[in-house]
Each structure stands twice: as C-alpha cells, then as structure tokens.
Image (cartoon, rainbow, N blue to C red):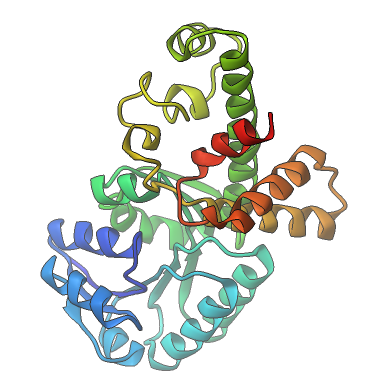
Length: 293
C-alpha cells in the first residue's frame, strides 16, 4: 500500500481521501480549514500542520483545490519537498494553462505528474464511483491508475499534460447546456398541463434522453436520488457549474472555438448565482425559469 499526501480535504477531497484509507493506504492530509481537517481525521486521515509535513516521505501527492492559482501555489510547496520520481496528481478542475504549468513544474523537479479532474459530484466522491479524466504521460497514468481506482469506477487517459482538464471543461459545458434544456422543457410541460412523470417517461426513453434527465431529473419524483427530491441540496453546486462554464468560455476565447450555447448557459448560471443560488444544486435553476414565465 502507498503513503499518500492529500492536499485539500473539502466536500470532494475529504471523502476521496477517506476512500483511500478504506483501501488500506496511509493518508496524510492538509487543509487550511481546521474543521475540515478534523473531519478528515475522523475518517482515518492523519492530519498535518503544513503541506510540507504532509508531503514528507510521501510516494504520491494528490491535490483537490478551488482554482489554478491555488494549485500552482500548493505545487510550489509540494515540489520543494518532493523526492525525485514522486507522483503528483491534481484532481482539481482548473484552467488548462495552469494545469500545464503545474506539469512543467513537476518535470523540472524530476517528478511524475497527472491532471485528473473528476465527475460524479459529492455523492460519487463518497461512494467511490467518480470518473477520472487524466492527462499526462503513459508512465504517470500507469502508476496513478490503481490509486484512482480506489476513488472511482471509470479512469480514462485522455492524452498528454492538460488533456484531463480539457475533457472536464468540455464535458461540463455539455452538462450545463443539457440541464438548461431539460429545465426549460419541464417548465413548458407544466404550462401545457403535462405531468412531470409523463414527460420523463417519454423523454428518458426517446430522443430527448440525456444524463440531465435520466439520472439527475430537475423535478421531484421521477428520479428519487436526484437533488430535486432533497430540496436541491447540492450534489454539484450551481457556483461550481458556473466556474466550469467560465473555464469553457475562457478556453473557447483562447482557441477561437465557437460555443454560443456554452456562452448562453454561462450567462444563465451567472444570473442564477447572482440571485443568491450559488450554494444550491445546479439543477435548481429550473426555479429561475419558472419565475421568468
């Protein structure tokens, strides 16, 4: 079993680290928030007072942090302590440029590196069923895969440095767009006198089917496990969806890609967030469309 340092133990990182402990790995963790660190300790993670303490003697380091600047700062500290051939994995969702800079830093320190953002939300993190989208060398991926399998059920090597972040940004742009479309359809169905169950029974088994309706239906009833049945308690917060949509639009601008639907989805989630809904599940945006009709 491996000695792993885990940096960032929040809503996603905490349960991911706990699953590593359950798999028999020795996990040392660090987080700036004391209550978060204490909660991780209760799941078997050994707390560290600083990044350098967590990383000391670690074979593998995993980071799960909010933004690219946080990752670059943390990796600066990590790589100052790192032994040659240490594997550093970033599971955050950040911009591709920052991810590639982190890879360059690791290479300069003679360390292997992987960007491996996740999909599956807090439920997937707790259940160990996340999907990992990985970017980096074949050697880094081969070494990381058994570790990632302790936290997820699907591990995809998407390409070289930054490819995991690119895949995550594209995937979540699809998700944001599709959720908007599904929400609009249910609001229209309500106005037409069609029941939620009737629309679900048709759309989930015909040409309208997609993850946003089949697995994460934004109205109560049809999918019992969806946040709509739990007061829109976030599995994936609207603020995080907005963050990912902004990343997609920054990437589109940088590459000259045309993403009009992605841009519209970003504007809609920005409005939803501005109305004070950033902490709710992103599927709760259906309520904004009801207010507009």
